[in-house]
Length: 117
Image (cartoon, rainbow, N blue to C red):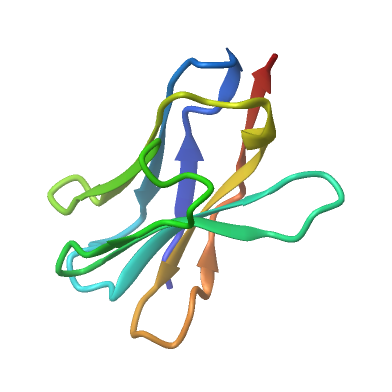
């Protein structure tokens, strides 16, 4: 069982930056992958960043070059650095864990990110 707690959301002006944190209840060293998803009102949840245990990262085109995911295994924490934020980035952001490569099965409670124009 992995418990995830997100923090760092808030209100920011367009063009600004935020850093989200995801603290895990146990060691993330051996977790296959960690990810960040987001869900805007009326839209499906979408993956915005993922990082594997060996440090490989994956981003959709909508955030590539603006968002950076990283993990600190010593602190059992995953981060999402978001730069050049746009109003369309407004959503609830969720941290997720894929322990053994079978999919993201553990989720945090989400943190709201609102970008004003």
